[in-house]
Amino acid sequence: MPRTHRRDITPSASRLLSSLRDVGYDFTTAVADIVDNSIAANASRIDIRIDDRGAEPSVLIADNGCGMTRATLVEALRLGSRRDYERDDLGKFGLGLKTASFSQCRRLVVVSRHSVHRYRVTTATLDLDAIASKDRWVLPPPDLHYANEVGSDWLLSSTGTVVIWQRLDRVVSISGPLNGWDRRRLGKLIKDTAFHLSMVFHRFLEGKAGRRRIRITVNGHRLRPWSPFATDESSTQCMTPQSFELGSSSVHGRVLMQAYVLPTREQFSSPDEFERLSGPRKWNGQQGFYIYRNNRLIQSGGWCGLRAPDEHTKLARVAIDFPSSLDPLFNVNIAKMRVSLPTDLRLLVERAVLDVVKAAQATYRGPLKVVHPPSDPAVSEKSRLQPHTSYTELMVALRAAALVTGQSRSLAKVLDRLGQDAPDLAVLLGLQQSPRRYVKRGRADA
Image (cartoon, rainbow, N blue to C red; front, side, top):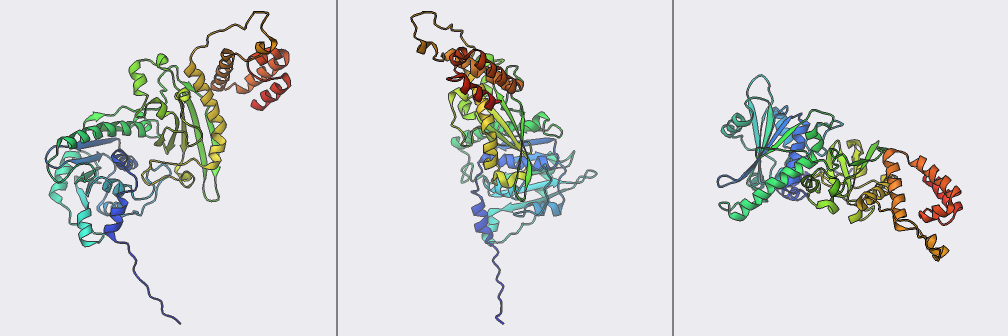
């Protein structure tokens, strides 16, 4: 009987960590991934400080969550940490703390307080250079003096966790003092991070995520939630919500879809609010799907290949919510920045997307100008029966209004009757070329 040889194929610690630095994060999404952990720890307050004081900048993310024991903290620093995720958890792979941090820095320090009744902090450090020098997964001895210094600033009055990024080699030049370019870049990152968090976690900031409202500050400034859907504007059109069942042999769940048509510039409460709702990519780039996983925004804007962005549909925005149980179908990536719509869902939402696009086009065009049909008796019968642009726009507006009020079936019946009683008028409105063909279309729309 041949002898079997067991060989250790533990991956190289240095090479693996270096590879994981490039899984797709940018600075703002990396910070958001750390905030996910704070929310999972039931924090109600999260403070982010991007510090450019002194010779070496740093990033600090502190929360007042439940904190971690020494054993829990060590496990949290393991790649692919062993933990069970709840249904509403924002985490997924057990990699976020490490991959998000090392995508931006070379040294990660975590300080945590778990006990409510007494002040006692625990700390641990992961240092890329230390791991590279030994090529082993090891934690160096903790710096208790630094831990107590951080704890006295952030953890004295409550439990919580402080994550610190040091040696920001992916952010600034760390070979010497900060130069003007570095300081300008850090200033821009502060603004970009504030907006990104206000968008990604807007439901948590609003208290609409099924848990208590959270407070997030960036360099001392409290974030105002940025909801893509302008629900506070009186002219925003909220379509009828829809629900779809998705599943496979191993997973199943329900996907919710809610479409909105935002107001035009003239309909907004103020020009400043119109500009604020335009988003970072402005109106044309922000139209489309806003995809949420457990109330956390994963993807903002774009039609996922169902259609191309268009100036006339820039007011259309559609929320799609799915639970973490459907992660395999949506192909959520590690950085939680991108998803793909399942094929079955694409087929289900196609008609709904067409409806909201029509409503957005009608809103974009604005109030209709009434143009009377030609009265000149010399006008030929053929030209008299050509659909007039204004009447076509009227039909688009009627269909959009029926969709918003949930009366699409009723409108289809009315138009069906109109096609029978006044076929010439039906043709003038651009409904169909003959009463018989129009009736079939009306029934199909119903």
